[in-house]
Length: 175
Image 1 (cartoon, rainbow, N blue to C red):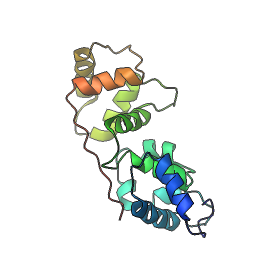
Image 2: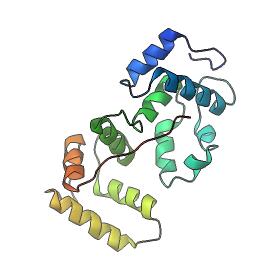
Image 3: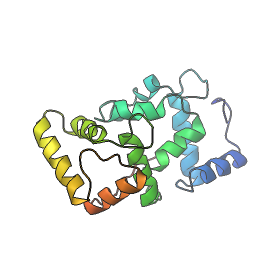
């Protein structure tokens, strides 16, 4: 499975399926493997950030630079695990954990006000001012019982997402 020139065995497919908590069917895993092999242009069994940027939809994503931090150097199993958060079969918990990793820019397990502000900036660009972003974020945090100085861990993050009324319906097509 590490060498992209090899074919997936039934055992490989089942192992990957289990690794991603059955977020993808066996046929979807085969399709993802084909896509992985297309991205892995040098055939090394890993996909680089540069190779991910060759996907136009990824390159124009406002969070692409944050996602690259999570993606660079993934093997196929890790690639599928990464994409599993976008599967309609992923649990809300899996999706929230993924979002938390996007916000946790230094990977220390804590999200700061500035981490959240940076993501909002990536998402909104010049459409709203820095002051407006700070006001919105401060209000959301306060409504959930936090403030600008709070260091949020996963359980805090879940509480804030729940209090904001966010409904998570993110999907990714695999074909």
